[in-house]
Image 1 (cartoon, rainbow, N blue to C red):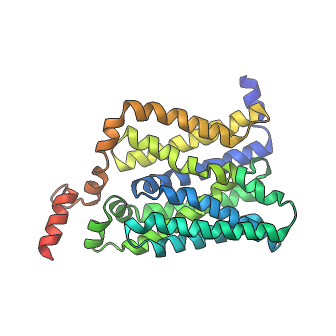
Image 2 (image 1 turned 45 degrees about the vertical axis):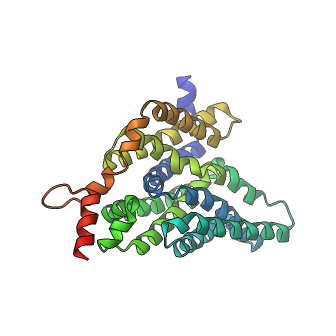
Image 3 (image 1 turned 30 degrees about the vertical axis):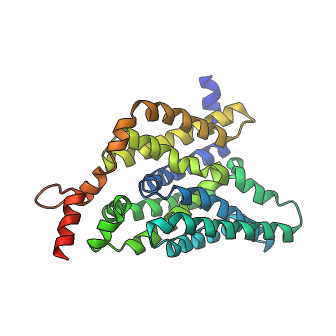
Length: 303
């Protein structure tokens, strides 16, 4: 068994898939933590489907599907941000953008007329077709996304768990929302190459959901989420390579599910108590830790 695994890693396409997968797993897991905390999980589900429509349009116009994927997801992320200025409007805006994009995708496929194999490969991933250039591009884009998330970590954390208090404190909530959704769009476009549009949601939500059940500290949860994402991706690609016929996305989704369910069942109480903690950390002052409620009351009094 060990000899088979070692021999598997000698293949160039497996090496490319593993390198690309690690970059994607880190970026997806970090983005996924804020996606869960901010209630944007529906966006994580919608953007891969929208990307499929972009890939269909790219094939129709004779360019690589990945270019259409990037363009459509980025435009959709900007549209979602513009249409969801209030939290209660968020799901409605995301649903409207997704339905419009899917309609465009169906039109593009009908106009193309042929069997768009490259478009349908977007649904399930193209792990065997990842080149060294794809690895370099994915690595650069993933590192850029992670660096941007780290740069706006504190205000983004504050906004994620208490947008009203963040806006009252002068945090540019709308701009942060726009930038965050654009980062999500780029991350989705990268992840589609390995796991496919149908299961990008697994990488965005699975590691973060498990990590937030295991620790209350935002920094530790993000680090744990990234480590879990890398482990899921590495194990999924390895098992898919050993099986020969089974898809990578199946193994990644199964591992993510099997890791989450025991944590969800046996640590449910801790998960419920943790939501208020990141807000308190984001509101740290020189005098100590101030709770979100106290700080919000103070802001109201000043106004």
